[in-house]
Image 1 (spheres, rainbow, N blue to C red):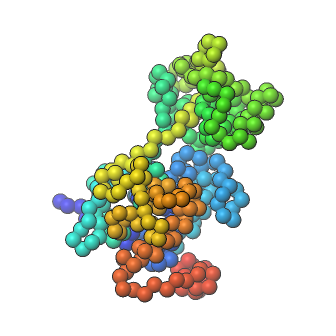
Image 2 (tube, one colour; image 1 turned 180 degrees about the horizontal axis):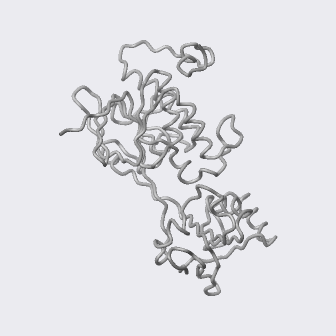
Length: 343
């Protein structure tokens, strides 16, 4: 028996901040949205990789954590009642005779939409696993690739490995609550913000953390519980006591099945125009970090701008011939009614 397709005006692939804000802009134009995400909740990288990490470049919010930003976006789009399908990857896409799209997930669900919006960040992503023997047996119990709740690391002997912004940021954020913290990097030079590096070395001078040059070559512990790591350094092996390990070796980004949709690609990104942020395939748009155009900046606020322009073009596809009147939420009573802020 053929599964009944879920129909919507716009299908959004990716429920990160940019995908969520697209729901708002589309909702103002009376377009119903359904979002599909490979993760188990909304928020994308903000929720998965740095929910408690502060973000400083969101307009009007001097500082907001990744999770707070997601929570505020979810509150903002609540009036539009978007629907979500989590823990799913879009497996196939085809255009139907009427010009709309049929999308199927890796679990066999079928969706039909007039417009498809790809807001999948860098595609599906997963942390790079360091080449440490038997690290798998400790993963999820004492080895973690992201910090979802800082309190889970309180009072632990913490070992952080890496030389980028994530490693330095979490070194500074977790040092006050860890019992002991050691940062390991293969060289004394870092790829992180100079201010973060200077703060780390200042804490080392105050003996509030340890910094070791080298690479983790082995882990010691039983039943998934770490007790120490062997660090191979310039003067030989040393053993570093640790009950938690955070390796930050970057992310592996993959477009996944999106790469097979027949779209023009540029170095694993999707080229778009800067009027509508439409791809080479009419009716399919790409917003956020996954798109490419001259001058592109990979910032959340850039994705918000792209979502606003995309929504205007999407409305013309879903409602051809309908006159679109641009309105401001500050002065339009009809928009305010949609948002539930006026009678």
